[in-house]
Image (tube, rainbow, N blue to C red; front, side, top):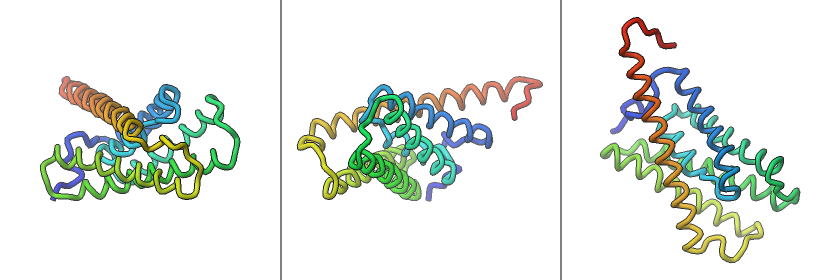
Amino acid sequence: MLERNQLPLRPVAPGFAVAWVVVISGASVALSLLFACITPFVALAAVSAVILPRRMAVTAVLLAWLANQMVGYLVLGYPQTWDSYAWGLAIGIAAFACLATALGVLRLSTDLTVTMAGAFLAGFVAYEGALFAATAVLPSGEGAFSAAVVANVLLINSLAAIGLICLHAGAAASRALVARQPGTVLS
């Protein structure tokens, strides 16, 4: 079985993990401003599941969701209506469903790349499924779950996940390079 500490992207220093919680939260703000209603919570949750210890991943997703809601209501002018608030809550629930699913997939014993891709894809299905289930009680546009919209959401999440993983790999590589310098002390 693949252990979480065997993941190559897992930070070794607690300060590095805390920094990644900040990066995920900051990415949520930036991506919320860029994509508004298509903030890539699947990417944020799946990458958090892969990179961070479980409790910190939960914290990262919570902060990412809160940051998204603050940007939406304070900067982008989301409507102050009951259904808008309910959709915000549904998005939060969907993000945590994604995180829980991704964490579950990481427990599977298979090739690392397959496990990481499976965590992302299973998380995407959980996220979209939770949002689709919310349409049973919340108002939604007819095309909200059309193939074109779902494909666009998948593309945005895929690109965001790749970007976050590349950013993390670069940070991990630079940290390793700094660690190899004689006389360097890392905190």
